[in-house]
Image (tube, rainbow, N blue to C red; front, side, top):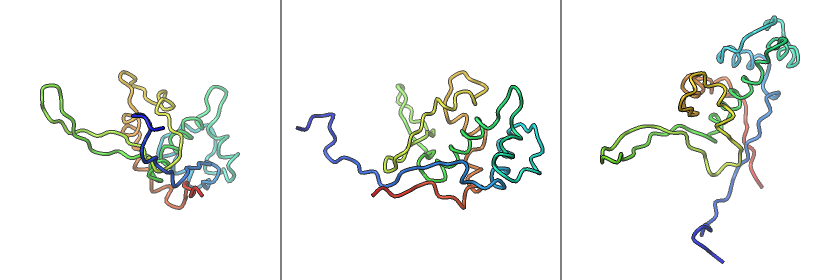
Length: 156
C-alpha cells in the first residue's frame, strides 16, 4: 500500500560513516587539538600513545577530550561529505530573495548526527545553530588533517 507519506522510490544508502578517534595517529590528533585550542594540562610533546595524549587534556575538573571528540567527529563528517554547507536562496514574506547558507546532510550515507550535541560548544548561545560552531571554530579548515583517513565503508 502506498500513501502520500510513503516514498515511491526509497533511497538506498550506499555507505556507512564509521568514526573511531583512536584510528587517528597521535601526531594528527596533536594538530587537531591545537587547531581547536583544547586546553592542555600535561606535556603534549612527550605523549606517544593515545592514552598518554588524552591524559594531557584532563585535570580534576576538566576533560577537554569530550569537546575535541565532537570537533574531530564533525571534521570527519565534513571530510567524508556526510554533511556540507551549501548556499541557498529563500524568499522572505515581503517577496525579497535572500542568499544565505545552511548545513545539509548527504542522504546517500548512513550516519547519526545531532546538532544539539554541539550546543555546549556555542559560547554565545542565543539562537544556537550548528553553523555558528562550524564557523567560529573553523571546522572545515581542519579537513586536511584527516586527509589520510577514510570514515566511509560501503554498505553491501
